[in-house]
Image (cartoon, rainbow, N blue to C red; front, top):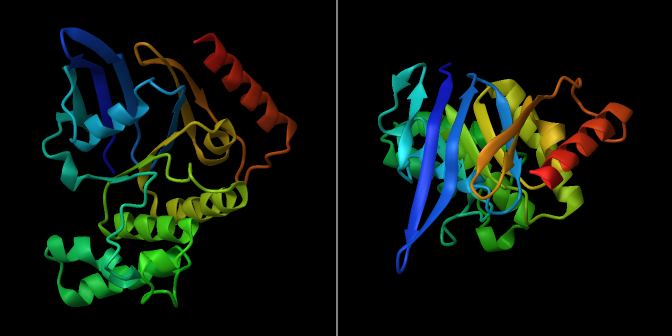
Length: 249
């Protein structure tokens, strides 16, 4: 798997009449292939903007996105972005939502059928293939979105607060499902969250970002064994450390 290199990214937005807003300044990261990285920071620190630049949905004002040291071309083929909003087609059932991007990719019917079946099973939605999104809970809809993203077989899965709108119990359940999928498939995951607990529970490494403009304030490698005990003393110590960094950045 290829390493993702974020090299000296700046992003400036221009707003009327003549105002410049620097969303990101000199952001540099290396994400190893198969690594699970969380980005955490206050609102306005540029986390989502960075994901959009990686995905090719925004252009940086300066800097480069590299894969294994080579200038990345069309990142749409390497990345899939999962949003907090479920972004499902409301007129299509679970099966058709998962299969649709595979059809657009031109994957043969037998292969896309096998892929859709595998990922619907992985997210625990077997038996719900015929259900429309409005018939599902928020957590189930997000599982459909994850299954659809994974079935596309991206190198890098970008997730922008995918569990942010869910209650705590459902959030914890989906965190467990996501970890099981990651441990089986070993996709590179870059996961944006405001939730310190979530970042510690999921990630190999946490990137804490400061704001105005968005910069990397600190990187923490999380070595706690999985599954992680949220009540453990070491977990609490990391939580307090991140909170202190956020409050001072």
